[in-house]
Image 1 (cartoon, rainbow, N blue to C red):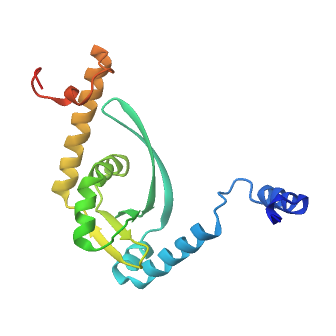
Image 2 (image 1 turned 30 degrees about the vertical axis):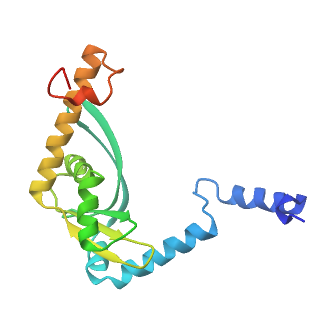
Length: 178
């Protein structure tokens, strides 16, 4: 039958979950993918060197910007660098460069710089095929990200002030007629 339906299995699972209290439990497939990504990153010299230069991992940060409180977790950092790890469908450099803008990672970079100071910001992208590429985000791109944050916060303030929660995409239109 179903071994996971047995009393013995349920007792064993309860014991294992109790041992893991305070830790995140992942399935075997997820663990295998994480170990594969770790190996691929270790074989990428730029990524490996960059991560080895970071003395801090999974750094929780809290900061205020534009009158709002923000929280985040920075994957890796040092006194000189911020590093963000990104799992992507394709870590080929050109694909990653497009994805950085499409997914707003430059906005995240701008906000994390607000929390950590004006440091070089890197993204290490990896995919399921073992591809790894390392990217330093240009200061102008991060500056554009901060301008986008300012625009979004301005919109949020306008929405709050004028109770415009019912608006759709026309909220962002420059004219009243769309």
